[in-house]
Structure formats: C-alpha cells, structure tokens
Length: 410
Image 1 (spheres, rainbow, N blue to C red):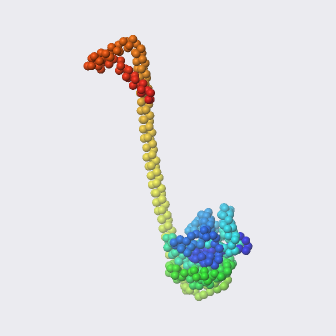
Image 2 (image 1 turned 120 degrees about the vertical axis):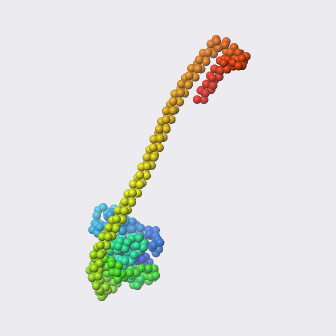
Image 3 (image 1 turned 90 degrees about the vertical axis):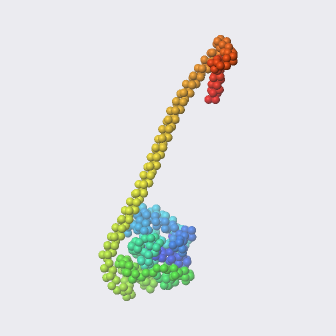
C-alpha cells in the first residue's frame, strides 16, 4: 500500500447497519474488491452484505487463534503483536496487496470491532468508520435472525463498542449513527465521504438508496430504560450518540468515555432510577448464568448419551461380526476335516482299485483264466437261473474297465 492510498475499515456491532453504510459508500466510489470476492446477498440481507470474503475469513482465523469467535469475543487484553500471529499478518499483507490499484478502498466486517488493533498495526493512517445503532434494536434484530436472547445481544453490543472506542484513534475515526440515515442520509453521507477522501459527485444518488419503509423497528433511550437495560450500556450508547452528533456539528470529537451532551438532559433522574435496578440486574445475571450452566450440562449429557449409544451400537456390530467370523472359521475347519477324510478315503479306494487291477492282470495271464473263463460263460448261458453266480470272470473285466474310465477323468 502506497502513501497516496487511503484504506477504510468499516465496522460496528453486528446488525448495526454496516451493510447499509458500505453499500452507500460503494455507490459513492469506494472500492471493495472484485465482485466475486464479495459475500453474495441472502434472504435475511437481500441488499447484500458487501463483505470481502478474504477479510471475513482472516478475521475468523484471528479470533479462533485467540480462543474466541464473533459471538464469543476473546479477552480484552489480548496481544495482537504476538509472534504466533505472524502467519496471519502475512495473509493480511497479501490481501492488502490486491488493492494496490485503488486510491480509496475499504472493507467491512463487524468482527473488525474485535480485531481493530491487528489491522491498525498493518496500516499507516487507517481510517475507521464506526456505525452505532440503538442496542435494543441490535438485540431485537439478532433475536429475529439468530434466535439469540436479548441479554446476549445487549452484552455483545456493549463488548463490540467498548473494544472499538478503546482501539480507535479519534483523529482517524468517525462515528455515525444508524438513525441519521433515515433523517438526512445525504448530509451524513456527504460528511463521511469528505472524511475518507472520496468525491461527492454520487452522494445524492447513493443517499436515495436508503428506503425508510424498510425500517421495521425503532427504539429510543426511553425504551432502553423501560426495558431495564444495564446503566453502563445506556451510558455508553449516549456517549456514542454524543460523538456522532458532535462530528455532525463540526465540533471536536469528544472522548466517548467522558463525553457529556451539551443539550438539556433528555432523561432527568435516569441514573437514579437505573441504580435502583442494579441488585435486580445482578440477580438476573446470576439467574442467566445458572440457566446457561444448566443448558450446557444438559447438552453435554445428551452428547455423552449419544456417544455412548453410538459406541454400544458399534460394539454390538463388532460382536456380531466376531461371532459370524468365528462361525465361518468353525465351518471352514469342519469342511477341511471332512475334505481330509474324503481324500484319505479316495486314496484308500485308489490303492484298492490299483491292487484289484494288478490282481486282474495276473489272473488274465494265468492258465486257469484262459481255460476256465470261456467254460464259465458257456455255463451261464446254458443255466439262466444261476446266471448271477456263474458270470465267470467277465464281471471282473467290467469293473476294471469302469475303474480305468474313472481314472482318466480324475
């Protein structure tokens, strides 16, 4: 990346409007990478996510390496300069090289809220755009989309935004508010375009892309108090509102941790009322923790039972196979024994027949055979009643002939 280029990191908590903001900036000329590298639209976000799949994948790898995920933020004090992250830094540099031809380019990913220190170390003058949305709206949207609880959504919103204000450099970051795009999108978009260094020629047409009718949910600070949202979450949200409003009025950006609104207090006595809810909130946290622990134990127990059932089924199959194999081996042994018996019997029969053939040969060469056999045959013809007893030696000839025939085929 050259000194004449500007890189823009677009971030904010999930469901805060990062996709909408990135879409508008893309319409103003912000380069996001080739189209086939961007996440395609889906049913829950038909206007597109405008996320570069390479940056999303790398952020996921980074969070995983730190023992977390998008919905399980790693510890706040993680060292992003750790040598074990060097392979990921090399991947990041390769991604960045793909934008060398663009003067102003950027990437959007809510996970940047958790990984911003990693990216700031790779850029000189990285500009960060932070979009903020009412935490109750974020929690409601996450519940509708992911089925998460309100308490989970609120907690994730707080972690994402606290990590952001800790990592962002006030001189190179800009905070905007989701609501501003439904009040005066063109003015807010013009302010952002000026900050990142894009021409404002397409601001009006880009601002026209905002469809107010698509906004189905809108909550206020009063709704946050009525919902008994934690006081620290409300104060953080008010500080971020102040910073977004201060920038809009061309004032110096206030420190979001110490900023105070210069307008009359919108909620007199709010802090006093909120403090009364602290014990109840602590009890609620403990109850939620116990519920989560119980759900985890039940899930683990079910998984163990499923694994045990699978293991038992596998063992049963192995036993059946072992029994079948043993039976097959026993049958094979029995057949071998029977075969050996038959072979021995056949050998004995062959020896007996060989001996019979030898005896027949000797008999045929004897004088008795030559004289008596014709006489025996003549008697057999003359005495039919005794033909079986007086067959003579012709019967032996037939046996020998049959044996010879059998030997030629075996």
